[in-house]
Length: 610
Image 1 (cartoon, helix red, strand yellow):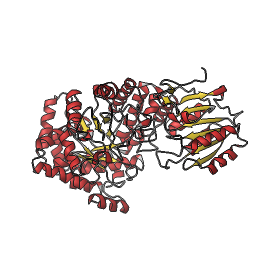
Image 2 (image 1 turned 90 degrees about the vertical axis):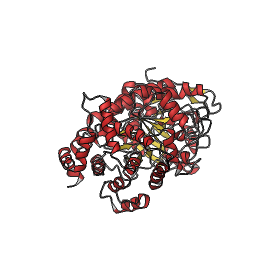
Image 3 (image 1 turned 90 degrees about the horizontal axis):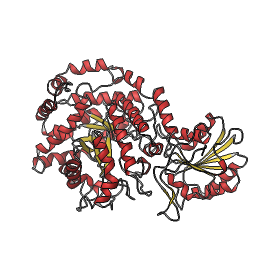
Image 4 (image 1 turned 30 degrees about the vertical axis):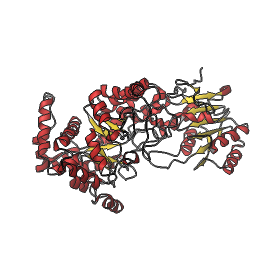
């Protein structure tokens, strides 16, 4: 019997026939509607009492794994699993380490296509229910949507990212996007999504948050975060607000170093806290920590992930959050800078963390926690406290009642026409028109039939992140234009700028795709030289809306806030006049020559009928 052929009923029959699943049914069945919280707690505590210490430690970990199948990954991934974890497959990892969760990545071959993802989830759940103390797993993913952080691609519905939604300013759209994303994830057996981002991007130089944030206004961000939380959780997927206590004002990437936030406590209350307060008020199931120093909140300068004053003192006691606290990935340099790798998981638990996400060396981290309990640095009671929160979330999601999914659910939910149509409608309300001199836009198929689409195209091609130049060329072709694509892998050299100028000859208009333009970027010369040809130039910033400040007197400029296919298609339709530009800047764009002054303020955005 293989994963792909198992229906929901067959899966349930196969698992309930085992003694392991019978134990789950007897000791940890899902609470019926009329059972109170006390009965649920008692039942889950009885389940915890049957766990060995090794099983308890495992429940705290969420690990990655290589391969598309829980039991039969391809040989290359078997070799990688043996190298990284000492096991051959996800099922063997669950058996050896008793992990409470698995996180999926496309690069690890976990996310080929929706039915495969569902089969992988089912295989992982069978492994969880085959343990001595049977417990379903919490399968998670980073699916923020947009172009920067997305792990599951087409045919699953692709949706605009956070800053694009912030530009759309619609709480209803934010909630709908969360509901659609949540429904599709749940159909594939993914019940924990590390979204939405609750950070307020007040620093245009932020290298890691940026368009992953809804914007720079704390109250607007809070409203969008609470709407997304309600959207995800209405689809029975646990949402996760991140990165507490707030990663929006950093100029350092915590993947590679340890950033420090200079906000005062008053500034934290005013800028960073509102979105997390709103998420908690909306019933958020989990909150992710940040690998940042925040001296005003903890003068020890420990990373927030390892800070008891921040996680227990503020998040638990002041804000009243009693859901699951999960670390950001423990393989990131920001959390490993100050302490050795074996100390990090122990210190995180002492700080108040419940789930330990993605340690670089699972065996080292797992054994470090085990040893800390045996030596008395951590108590089993402390572990039980976190395990109870984790099991409570699994119960809330119905995983004890039925952890399995089916191909039928996938086919009737993932990438269905109503979801695709709604995603397109949402995206069309996000594209922001920043400049439109002399009414250049919208382009007209009669006057601007022949287009050149040129610019930076360096993002790697994969199932969830198209190359923007080719995607835009195709979108314009679908709209009746004759479009030629000229992509550059890196910021264009002088020779490549000459090539673009030559290609513009005879064209009716040029659409230039820009990506993170700075003062030294060859993209500035590209736009300037193209404008000098006399051919109308339209600049489309596909990441930061801040690009326009570096482009001089460009005739027309727009921001799409991402290069996912749905965002690029929407931008093309706006440029072609098929829909009105409705987006408004959710962040200010500072002047290049005076960053303290706004070139365009929050709320700026033009319409064709202005």
